[in-house]
Image 1: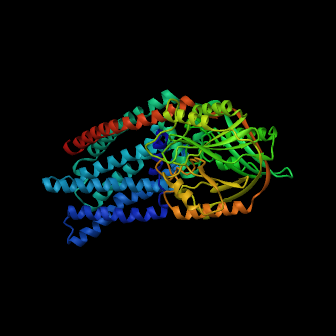
Image 2: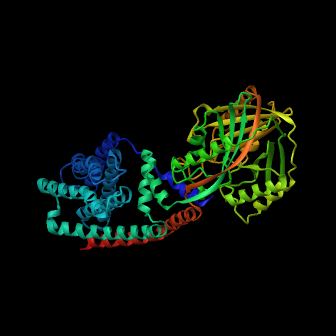
Image 3: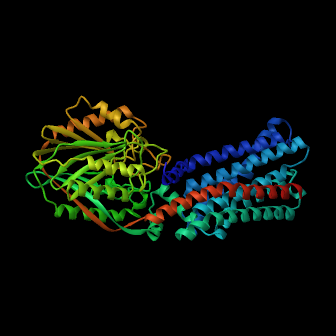
Length: 605
């Protein structure tokens, strides 16, 4: 799996949190249970076990639950006042619940250990739990809200202070074994020092995480994390500002094959931009195939041209430049009423299906049934130049069918054997004369509402059947990010009885489906049979739509397209990967040392 896909796989840890009302009820129930268990573990001589249970439950609600409810209701307001992001009411309430639960569980465990060792660790365990809750609060708030450390401390400390305050008041009013035995000053001094240790640990860890990205890319890990979460939760595209600042302008290509009806109206467009639809969700060009297709009034298929994550647009606004180049190509396009039949050629793993139209050729490239990932632009450009020379055509339109997913297989890069296999396949292609009239039929479907869970993007499934000299070829395009290995061949077998002679299935490589999966989310992993039914239906409907057309091809340059850039994309991926690797070592080391120091400080001093 590619590095970018591994990074995108972090999105699987983003989950939809419960509503604030549900969390509110969970706080009440859990806090009661925590207190009840505490008092059962350490009976307070209040009478029967049942009395201890209910009294402990009330204690738990007051000491743990009430501060959690207050901070859950107010933290998001404090963060909003401080110009922070990502902390809505449900997030604030859930954070308070988790912090409360951590504090309560640690209190129970510490008290149990004290009973086993015949030490009274009741109060110290509660204090230790409160300090851990503070550390968790500050780590979350500082990491995701984009407010400064000092301001984050002011927000994060509210819940621990309330818990300590309520603990003191409750102990005093009920004459329990209380913090007064330690002394109020000693209690607060213990908590302050312990909190300072955790604060130092968190600051050290974040500094380690932040510095490589700031040095290499000009923005920090916390920025990209907070904007990423904001995108996942709210659909915000603020993260595009970071990419725009770090991006590079490039020139690339787009291939256009247009089919025009006798009255001059365009019936169908087949577009192959050498621009990558990534990185994920709705960020950058992730939904480019749908956005670009919807800019045209006619039926439009936006296939995957040779490109990698280096060529991800920094924002969806950049798609306008691709559209402009397509329109320029249409304005300068020459049409012919004749075309060639569809013919396949192969050499080793490389397979190319070719069809000549006017002064160009559509070349559908795949390494299926072997697995493959993106074809790098330089590899695609070399292949197109080779085809211009060998086939004497002006407008080669190369498509990376992207239809054979293998998690272990990387992209096709310069120097890979696959590059030379493509070039050798091009040499096998025989240029065909344009002797036969063309008919084209189109059909599109949303596959019954299938969506990201099934690996299907907004454009669903689009099928175009081209009939030349009695031969019918089905061009089938899924708005998906790759296809499960072997599913292409399954589809081929499932449509053998239909009135077509050739078929190729492709995916757009849209990364809009990658927010719910571990990096990739290829079509064909679920609902296989139902999807095939829609493929069959689309082919039948496209055949019914066949009508005579003229065809034209043109390859146009896209200029000054702002993308991640060949260097920055690799830098971003490698930096994030290195941060994750370093964090696996640094985080346990830093936080375990902090926990040990705080444990000794609270329990032994």
